[in-house]
Amino acid sequence: MSQRVTLGLVQMKSAASIAANLARAESRVQSLAHRGAQIIALPELFLTPYFCQTKDKKFFGLAEPIPGPSVRALQDIARRNKVVLTTSVFEKGERGKCYNTAVVLDADGKLRGTYRKMHIPDDPKNYYGEAYYFTPGNLGVCVFKTRFAKIATLICWDQWFPEGARIAAAKGAQIIIYPTAIGYQLKAKSGINEAEHEAWQVIQRAHAIANTVFVAACNRVGLEHRLRFWGTSFVTDPYGRVLAQAGTEKEEDVLVPCDLEVIDQMREDWPFLAARRMKVEG
Amino acid sequence: MSQRVTLGLVQMKSAASIAANLARAESRVQSLAHRGAQIIALPELFLTPYFCQTKDKKFFGLAEPIPGPSVRALQDIARRNKVVLTTSVFEKGERGKCYNTAVVLDADGKLRGTYRKMHIPDDPKNYYGEAYYFTPGNLGVCVFKTRFAKIATLICWDQWFPEGARIAAAKGAQIIIYPTAIGYQLKAKSGINEAEHEAWQVIQRAHAIANTVFVAACNRVGLEHRLRFWGTSFVTDPYGRVLAQAGTEKEEDVLVPCDLEVIDQMREDWPFLAARRMKVEG
Image 1 (cartoon, chains in turn brown, purple):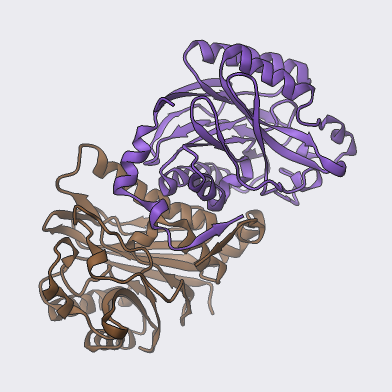
Image 2 (image 1 turned 60 degrees about the vertical axis):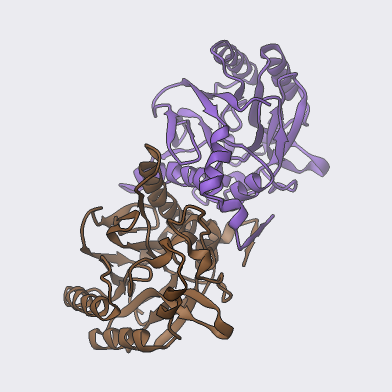
């Protein structure tokens, strides 16, 4: 396994139809792969508009088993472009339970595994009314050995919880990827959106520092209903230095070469994982 | 308990003698108290030079029981100025074991409790050769109800571990205070000092965000042997916004009014503590 890997982030808007979003994703993945990307992330639930701002039974019709038609289409995209691909999808699980589930598709198109989002926002203002749709994940935090690196995928609200990143790193992740859908709330009090936006990046940089891993966040962008997704898809190195970052306003591809050897070098000076005195479990 | 509290940080250099450092601390505490400070922090082990850059048995002679002469002097300073006071001291503990121990002295001078540093750097380059002197703490993370707020004191290297801050907040801390002694290494590779300095603040801002608490760091400043302590003592609110910050070059007093009501307000939007799915223990 080479120690150099190039990450690609597809910061995108989601159109109304799954077919359109898959086609859009494929062309963006193809372009990033041509430029050298090996591991590519798409935003959280990118297959559809972010329906969680409304509670409506009809949206359960969007859920699919894994693998289902959409995941199979994504597997084909990964295989055709020889890239590792990750995003989250609306999973129709066992006994009618639905999950917000990350899929990790290896560069040969194989489904390497899934992670079901554990921290589900139950937002009374329904900016992120996810608890109506998603059961909290029951698979724990998973690390996947892909062709190019050992990665963990956590999802959006998991970003605020240091425990998930800690477990991922302790299980061997070199890169933690957060597909996400987060934005400015149209009716927030003055200053709150700016504070949340900044905090969102700070805490993910801190996950990289605390665990000496690379962290990547891939976000939606643009207005949907009462949320203006703030983009800012970025990659940080294990010092928490932002290596590359998209803007807040438009669709962008982010391409970031990462040298994973930095992880072992840093851990000589900062053996945080080895020196922990407190247990995290979950 | 009022919801408004004013923090004071004494960013200082340590002179050779304990008596001189106590006198200096007293005059700074007095000045901050006159300006309204209610909870005041002094840097880690401020009673002496930072002896951990050298391994020498003679330094064990600096350790004192708690309470011993120095802690009693600090209790008097707290009582005379009607402030909560916290710092860390070199504790001579049971059966010859020594600890790097935070003391929390209430505004009436009472010793409210102690916390023994749990994460002890064992630095082969001896910038922070603490493992030679200090046994890892055996008291767990403690929260102290003082006259002005519920505070937890963690110490320096603990800063890099999200677990400690998490436990402190889960036990009810409103403010986490880190007395610290950290600086630029005179022989570090280019760029490393800057990266570490920035990471140091980012991760503490993230502790505030993850736990919706205030975080304060009080550091040494100035050159001692091979470390140039970088000051930058600061206070961050629960959004990770730095409310006030000292410079990197000289002694400074930092005075920061904090509105603790923000904590409960924020937890309505961001109920991270309540929504955790993973356990932290220690």
